[in-house]
Image 1: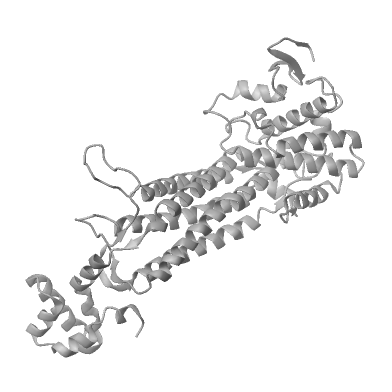
Image 2: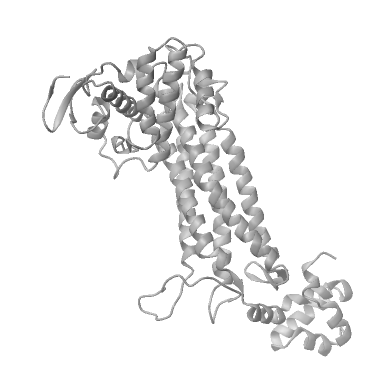
Length: 469
């Protein structure tokens, strides 16, 4: 340490002296990143899941290094205590870096190393920035490289966010819609294809389709998530494991599994998980699939609720806030609008993640931070939007039975029930006659002499038309 003032201290790294704010625990390399990458506003979007992941990783690495005889037990104990502070969120303000930095995440890894080392020095009663008795590289980063720790953090943080936020939100909306589907199983409404009238369905059947979309998307996400359990730790710089104990990767993965309760393992091939991040790409794509389902559901809801006088008006949704600054009494389907906007953001993030995932060169992909940022932003935004849509829209959906019945009765496509009895062409004659003369199907059928009144009433049964046969 070259010097100290009330406002800053001077630390050294391989490139020389760096002025670091005296009130913070980060060190020279973190400060260089702050100075050299004034790109974007604020720090990483990801926040807590990534910081927590770094804390878990460094804590488990110190424990394993001590057990393997690679690190003195007293140092390891200090590192574990400091890392636990990171896990618990006590040091979140010490992680200031933005997304657009080095593509390997080296500066974020060093941010964690420096903060944990300086916190350990504090706990030992030493001088912050002295690197004694705990060194950020030699001790906290022992047996590691940013090239294998940052991919491990990508996996830990993404699993944490999926399990803690997105999957619960999607499951809750799924449960709401499933309950509504069962409750409205007897509500016969007109189906629509090409945005035009089609044969009848029940509102329960419509909503069961939404439920199945969510079920399929959830299964896709869970399958993709499970591919995140293998960790890159032990690969160090290029996948060979240089400078790491031969058992480091497997033992740290086991320690992380014990710490988190998740089935993490050592990746079978470190070269793949350093130079490519296909597992993250697949998670992003799976989240996009859920966003696609959400887009369909939200759009259907706002179409069915359109009106209230000149739209479809088949369901009611909660009135949450005034909808216009000029039109008094106007209410808009704002939860659908918010959810669909989030879906478009997820689509954009997924395009970024996919392109970034394609950019691995030789032994390293250097688009790691933006891949993690895009994936976690999609997870968080979609989790928030699904939860809001569930609470403020889906739970309040109710059928407007009079409007639904009137739409069914006026539909020309009920004529489809006559096909087996009088043939497609005769049924088409009835439908076109009713349409051109603005009459009912029954009146048109009787006028054309193609069906008797009793047969029409027996054969054209909207409720029966919602079932096979």
